[in-house]
Image (cartoon, rainbow, N blue to C red; front, side, top):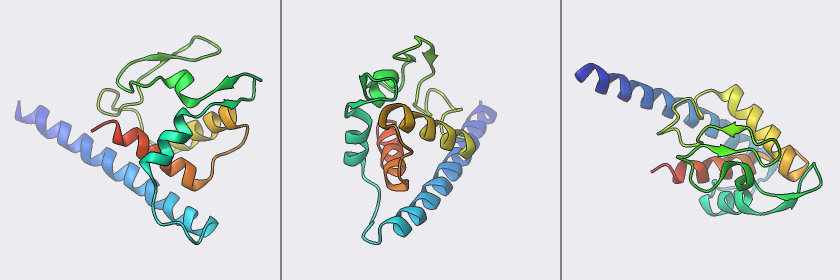
Length: 135
C-alpha cells in the first residue's frame, strides 16, 4: 500500500512540475506580448472555454462542444463523434503531463474554435480554468 501511495505522490509531483514549468513559460511569453499582464485568470479561462464562435468548419462551437463541462468524464468530438478522454488529470493522469502534447492540442483546438492560434495569455487562462475544476 505504501508503494502505491508513494507512486501516486511521485506522479502528482511530476505532473505539477511539468505544468508549472509550462505555465511559467507562458507567463514570460504573455508579459512579452502584453506588458500589463499580471497573471492568468480562471474567469477568463472559463469565458474562453465556454464562449461560442464560428469555428473553422463554419459552425458555432466552443471548447465545451467537444470536451463537455465535466472534465472527469469522457466526451465526444462535436464533428467526428470520436471519444475524447477526460481533461481532468485526476482521472486521466496522461492529461497535461507532456508539454509537446499540451502545445499541440491547445494550438489545434484554438484553430478549430477561434480559427487562430491562442495567445500565451489565453492558453494560460484556459489551463488555469481546467486545473481549477480539478480541485
